[in-house]
Amino acid sequence: MSRAIDTTASDRAIDRASNDLIDFIADPPAGTSLNDGLEQPTLGWFNASRATIAIPLYTARPDIERILDEVVAFARAVPSWDFLFIDDGSTDDTIASFNRRVAAINFVDPGTASRLAIIPSAPHAGLGHTTRVAGLESESEHLIVLTPSFAGDWSLLTRLRDELQSRQFVLAETTSPTPWALGLVRRLIARVLGADPVCTNVPQAIAMQGPDARFLAECSGIRSHGFDIELAAIAARLGWSRGTISPREHSSGVVNRPGIASTLKSHWLGHCGVTCLVGIGVALRLMLGGYRLDRASAQVRPQRGAFRRKAS
Picture 1 (cartoon, rainbow, N blue to C red):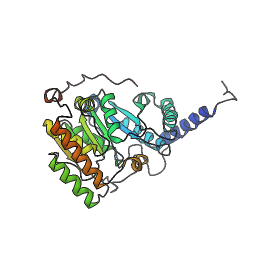
Picture 2: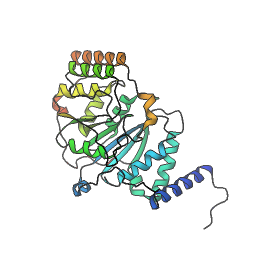
Picture 3: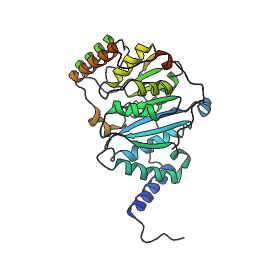
Picture 4: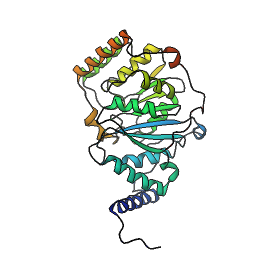
Protein backbone atom coordinates (compact mmCIF):
# COMPACT_ATOMS: atom_id res chain seq x y z
CA MET A 1 0.00 0.00 0.00
CA SER A 2 1.37 3.42 -0.93
CA ARG A 3 1.87 6.03 1.75
CA ALA A 4 -0.66 8.79 2.18
CA ILE A 5 0.33 12.11 0.71
CA ASP A 6 -0.78 14.08 3.81
CA THR A 7 1.61 12.43 6.25
CA THR A 8 1.98 14.61 9.35
CA ALA A 9 5.24 16.17 10.46
CA SER A 10 5.27 13.84 13.47
CA ASP A 11 4.93 10.77 11.24
CA ARG A 12 7.77 11.98 9.05
CA ALA A 13 9.97 12.52 12.10
CA ILE A 14 9.25 8.99 13.29
CA ASP A 15 10.05 7.61 9.84
CA ARG A 16 13.35 9.46 9.72
CA ALA A 17 14.27 8.27 13.21
CA SER A 18 13.30 4.70 12.30
CA ASN A 19 15.42 4.77 9.17
CA ASP A 20 18.39 6.24 11.01
CA LEU A 21 18.16 3.59 13.70
CA ILE A 22 17.75 0.75 11.19
CA ASP A 23 20.76 1.99 9.22
CA PHE A 24 22.88 2.28 12.35
CA ILE A 25 21.99 -1.21 13.57
CA ALA A 26 22.46 -2.78 10.14
CA ASP A 27 25.66 -0.93 9.27
CA PRO A 28 27.33 0.90 12.20
CA PRO A 29 29.80 3.64 11.24
CA ALA A 30 33.39 2.54 10.79
CA GLY A 31 35.21 2.07 14.07
CA THR A 32 32.04 1.79 16.17
CA SER A 33 30.09 -1.10 17.59
CA LEU A 34 26.78 -1.45 19.36
CA ASN A 35 28.70 -3.20 22.14
CA ASP A 36 31.60 -0.75 22.46
CA GLY A 37 32.68 -0.54 26.10
CA LEU A 38 30.20 -3.18 27.26
CA GLU A 39 31.17 -6.30 29.16
CA GLN A 40 29.57 -9.49 27.92
CA PRO A 41 27.08 -10.75 30.51
CA THR A 42 27.48 -14.17 32.04
CA LEU A 43 24.83 -16.82 31.46
CA GLY A 44 23.35 -16.00 34.85
CA TRP A 45 22.36 -12.57 33.60
CA PHE A 46 19.59 -14.03 31.50
CA ASN A 47 17.92 -15.43 34.61
CA ALA A 48 18.92 -12.56 36.87
CA SER A 49 16.66 -10.60 39.17
CA ARG A 50 15.05 -7.51 37.76
CA ALA A 51 16.75 -4.13 37.98
CA THR A 52 15.58 -0.62 37.15
CA ILE A 53 17.94 2.02 35.82
CA ALA A 54 16.65 5.55 36.55
CA ILE A 55 17.96 8.25 34.20
CA PRO A 56 17.18 11.91 34.97
CA LEU A 57 16.65 14.31 32.07
CA TYR A 58 16.41 18.06 31.94
CA THR A 59 16.14 19.98 28.67
CA ALA A 60 17.80 17.00 26.99
CA ARG A 61 16.43 17.36 23.46
CA PRO A 62 19.89 17.63 21.82
CA ASP A 63 21.08 14.40 23.48
CA ILE A 64 17.99 12.22 23.72
CA GLU A 65 18.54 10.23 20.54
CA ARG A 66 22.15 9.43 21.42
CA ILE A 67 21.22 8.47 24.98
CA LEU A 68 18.40 6.20 23.85
CA ASP A 69 20.57 4.50 21.23
CA GLU A 70 23.23 3.78 23.87
CA VAL A 71 20.58 2.47 26.26
CA VAL A 72 19.15 0.19 23.56
CA ALA A 73 22.58 -1.27 22.83
CA PHE A 74 23.16 -1.90 26.53
CA ALA A 75 19.63 -3.17 27.20
CA ARG A 76 20.12 -6.07 24.81
CA ALA A 77 22.87 -7.41 27.06
CA VAL A 78 20.69 -7.21 30.19
CA PRO A 79 17.22 -8.46 29.17
CA SER A 80 15.87 -8.44 32.74
CA TRP A 81 16.45 -4.71 33.26
CA ASP A 82 14.03 -1.81 32.82
CA PHE A 83 15.00 1.81 32.08
CA LEU A 84 13.00 4.60 33.67
CA PHE A 85 13.66 8.13 32.40
CA ILE A 86 12.52 10.94 34.68
CA ASP A 87 11.99 14.32 33.06
CA ASP A 88 12.73 17.05 35.60
CA GLY A 89 10.44 19.71 34.18
CA SER A 90 12.27 20.24 30.88
CA THR A 91 11.64 23.53 29.11
CA ASP A 92 12.04 22.02 25.64
CA ASP A 93 10.32 19.10 23.90
CA THR A 94 12.37 16.41 25.65
CA ILE A 95 9.34 14.19 26.34
CA ALA A 96 7.98 14.49 22.79
CA SER A 97 11.43 13.72 21.36
CA PHE A 98 11.73 10.73 23.69
CA ASN A 99 8.38 9.36 22.57
CA ARG A 100 9.25 9.79 18.89
CA ARG A 101 12.53 7.95 19.31
CA VAL A 102 10.93 5.14 21.31
CA ALA A 103 8.31 4.77 18.57
CA ALA A 104 11.16 4.30 16.11
CA ILE A 105 12.87 1.79 18.41
CA ASN A 106 9.58 -0.08 18.78
CA PHE A 107 9.45 -0.45 15.01
CA VAL A 108 12.86 -2.18 15.04
CA ASP A 109 12.96 -3.83 18.47
CA PRO A 110 9.59 -3.89 20.27
CA GLY A 111 10.91 -6.06 23.10
CA THR A 112 13.52 -3.49 24.10
CA ALA A 113 11.15 -0.57 23.53
CA SER A 114 8.72 -2.11 26.04
CA ARG A 115 11.39 -1.71 28.73
CA LEU A 116 11.75 2.06 28.17
CA ALA A 117 9.45 4.50 29.97
CA ILE A 118 9.44 8.18 30.84
CA ILE A 119 7.54 10.02 33.57
CA PRO A 120 7.35 13.78 34.24
CA SER A 121 8.55 15.23 37.51
CA ALA A 122 7.85 18.52 39.30
CA PRO A 123 9.26 21.55 37.46
CA HIS A 124 13.02 21.38 37.91
CA ALA A 125 12.81 19.91 41.42
CA GLY A 126 16.36 18.60 41.38
CA LEU A 127 18.21 15.31 41.31
CA GLY A 128 17.26 14.39 44.87
CA HIS A 129 13.58 14.61 43.94
CA THR A 130 14.03 12.49 40.83
CA THR A 131 15.82 9.90 42.99
CA ARG A 132 12.80 9.83 45.27
CA VAL A 133 10.45 9.47 42.28
CA ALA A 134 12.54 6.56 41.02
CA GLY A 135 12.34 4.86 44.41
CA LEU A 136 8.57 5.17 44.46
CA GLU A 137 8.07 4.02 40.86
CA SER A 138 10.50 1.11 40.73
CA GLU A 139 9.19 -2.36 41.50
CA SER A 140 12.45 -4.15 40.77
CA GLU A 141 14.75 -5.91 43.19
CA HIS A 142 17.54 -3.42 42.47
CA LEU A 143 17.51 0.30 41.65
CA ILE A 144 20.41 2.17 40.06
CA VAL A 145 20.08 5.95 39.69
CA LEU A 146 22.39 7.71 37.25
CA THR A 147 23.52 11.27 37.97
CA PRO A 148 24.66 14.05 35.62
CA SER A 149 28.24 12.99 36.42
CA PHE A 150 27.70 9.67 34.63
CA ALA A 151 30.59 9.32 32.16
CA GLY A 152 28.89 7.04 29.63
CA ASP A 153 30.43 3.71 30.71
CA TRP A 154 27.33 1.54 30.71
CA SER A 155 29.29 -1.54 31.79
CA LEU A 156 29.77 0.23 35.13
CA LEU A 157 26.13 -0.57 35.87
CA THR A 158 26.74 -4.32 35.72
CA ARG A 159 29.49 -3.90 38.32
CA LEU A 160 27.12 -1.97 40.55
CA ARG A 161 24.49 -4.66 40.28
CA ASP A 162 27.06 -7.34 41.12
CA GLU A 163 28.19 -5.35 44.15
CA LEU A 164 24.57 -5.20 45.32
CA GLN A 165 24.64 -8.96 45.83
CA SER A 166 26.58 -8.34 49.04
CA ARG A 167 25.71 -4.68 49.76
CA GLN A 168 22.58 -2.62 50.30
CA PHE A 169 23.95 0.73 49.15
CA VAL A 170 26.73 1.33 46.59
CA LEU A 171 28.22 4.52 45.11
CA ALA A 172 30.09 4.66 41.80
CA GLU A 173 32.87 7.25 41.91
CA THR A 174 33.03 9.87 39.19
CA THR A 175 35.88 10.36 36.74
CA SER A 176 35.54 14.15 36.85
CA PRO A 177 38.12 16.14 38.82
CA THR A 178 36.92 17.53 42.12
CA PRO A 179 37.88 20.97 43.44
CA TRP A 180 40.01 20.24 46.50
CA ALA A 181 37.89 22.49 48.74
CA LEU A 182 34.63 20.81 47.76
CA GLY A 183 36.14 17.36 48.15
CA LEU A 184 37.42 18.23 51.60
CA VAL A 185 34.06 19.66 52.71
CA ARG A 186 32.16 16.62 51.44
CA ARG A 187 34.46 14.19 53.23
CA LEU A 188 34.36 16.14 56.50
CA ILE A 189 30.56 16.32 56.46
CA ALA A 190 30.25 12.66 55.56
CA ARG A 191 32.56 11.70 58.42
CA VAL A 192 30.66 13.86 60.93
CA LEU A 193 27.41 12.24 59.80
CA GLY A 194 28.97 8.78 59.98
CA ALA A 195 28.45 8.34 56.24
CA ASP A 196 31.99 7.32 55.26
CA PRO A 197 32.79 6.04 52.66
CA VAL A 198 31.37 8.70 50.39
CA CYS A 199 32.61 10.06 47.06
CA THR A 200 34.51 13.35 47.17
CA ASN A 201 32.41 14.37 44.17
CA VAL A 202 28.78 13.72 43.27
CA PRO A 203 28.92 10.04 42.20
CA GLN A 204 28.18 8.75 38.71
CA ALA A 205 25.49 6.43 39.99
CA ILE A 206 23.86 5.24 43.19
CA ALA A 207 22.68 1.65 43.57
CA MET A 208 20.26 0.40 46.21
CA GLN A 209 18.18 -2.64 46.97
CA GLY A 210 14.69 -2.01 45.60
CA PRO A 211 12.80 -2.29 48.93
CA ASP A 212 15.39 -0.05 50.60
CA ALA A 213 14.99 2.58 47.87
CA ARG A 214 11.22 2.53 48.32
CA PHE A 215 11.57 2.81 52.09
CA LEU A 216 13.85 5.85 51.75
CA ALA A 217 11.52 7.47 49.22
CA GLU A 218 8.48 7.03 51.45
CA CYS A 219 10.00 7.93 54.81
CA SER A 220 13.04 10.14 54.38
CA GLY A 221 11.96 13.07 52.21
CA ILE A 222 15.20 13.02 50.22
CA ARG A 223 16.46 16.54 49.54
CA SER A 224 17.70 17.85 46.23
CA HIS A 225 21.16 19.12 47.15
CA GLY A 226 23.78 16.82 48.60
CA PHE A 227 21.31 13.97 48.32
CA ASP A 228 24.04 11.32 48.04
CA ILE A 229 25.52 12.38 51.39
CA GLU A 230 22.05 12.31 52.90
CA LEU A 231 21.39 8.81 51.59
CA ALA A 232 24.77 7.61 52.88
CA ALA A 233 24.05 9.13 56.30
CA ILE A 234 20.65 7.42 56.53
CA ALA A 235 22.16 4.12 55.38
CA ALA A 236 24.82 4.42 58.09
CA ARG A 237 22.17 5.15 60.73
CA LEU A 238 20.23 2.04 59.66
CA GLY A 239 23.36 -0.09 59.65
CA TRP A 240 23.14 -0.94 55.96
CA SER A 241 26.20 -2.43 54.32
CA ARG A 242 27.56 0.00 51.78
CA GLY A 243 30.48 0.33 49.43
CA THR A 244 32.13 2.35 46.69
CA ILE A 245 33.41 1.22 43.30
CA SER A 246 35.87 3.06 41.08
CA PRO A 247 35.57 3.43 37.31
CA ARG A 248 38.08 1.60 35.20
CA GLU A 249 39.50 2.30 31.78
CA HIS A 250 38.21 0.65 28.65
CA SER A 251 40.57 -1.25 26.40
CA SER A 252 40.86 1.93 24.35
CA GLY A 253 42.15 3.76 27.43
CA VAL A 254 39.21 6.18 27.35
CA VAL A 255 37.24 6.69 30.54
CA ASN A 256 35.16 9.80 29.92
CA ARG A 257 32.57 9.49 27.19
CA PRO A 258 29.43 11.57 26.71
CA GLY A 259 26.86 10.50 29.28
CA ILE A 260 23.79 12.51 30.22
CA ALA A 261 25.58 15.84 30.11
CA SER A 262 22.42 17.76 29.22
CA THR A 263 21.44 17.55 32.90
CA LEU A 264 24.85 18.60 34.17
CA LYS A 265 24.52 22.37 34.30
CA SER A 266 21.03 22.35 35.75
CA HIS A 267 21.83 20.06 38.68
CA TRP A 268 25.54 20.52 39.34
CA LEU A 269 26.22 22.69 42.36
CA GLY A 270 29.81 22.23 43.42
CA HIS A 271 29.31 24.85 46.13
CA CYS A 272 30.92 24.34 49.52
CA GLY A 273 28.45 26.59 51.36
CA VAL A 274 25.40 24.72 50.11
CA THR A 275 27.03 21.40 50.94
CA CYS A 276 27.68 22.60 54.50
CA LEU A 277 24.05 23.68 54.91
CA VAL A 278 22.91 20.28 53.67
CA GLY A 279 25.12 18.59 56.24
CA ILE A 280 23.70 20.73 59.04
CA GLY A 281 20.14 20.03 57.89
CA VAL A 282 20.70 16.27 57.73
CA ALA A 283 22.33 16.25 61.18
CA LEU A 284 19.41 18.13 62.70
CA ARG A 285 16.83 15.85 61.11
CA LEU A 286 18.70 12.78 62.34
CA MET A 287 18.88 14.15 65.90
CA LEU A 288 15.23 15.23 65.94
CA GLY A 289 13.94 12.03 64.37
CA GLY A 290 12.70 13.81 61.28
CA TYR A 291 13.32 10.82 59.03
CA ARG A 292 10.94 8.46 60.90
CA LEU A 293 13.32 5.59 60.32
CA ASP A 294 12.00 2.15 61.15
CA ARG A 295 15.02 -0.12 61.32
CA ALA A 296 12.99 -3.31 61.23
CA SER A 297 11.06 -2.50 58.05
CA ALA A 298 14.18 -1.10 56.38
CA GLN A 299 16.00 -4.38 56.84
CA VAL A 300 13.35 -6.48 55.08
CA ARG A 301 15.01 -8.05 52.04
CA PRO A 302 13.11 -9.29 48.96
CA GLN A 303 12.89 -12.82 47.74
CA ARG A 304 14.32 -13.27 44.25
CA GLY A 305 11.63 -12.69 41.67
CA ALA A 306 9.15 -11.38 44.23
CA PHE A 307 8.64 -8.05 42.53
CA ARG A 308 6.51 -7.86 39.47
CA ARG A 309 7.76 -6.08 36.38
CA LYS A 310 6.73 -2.46 36.05
CA ALA A 311 4.24 -2.07 33.24
CA SER A 312 5.53 0.13 30.48
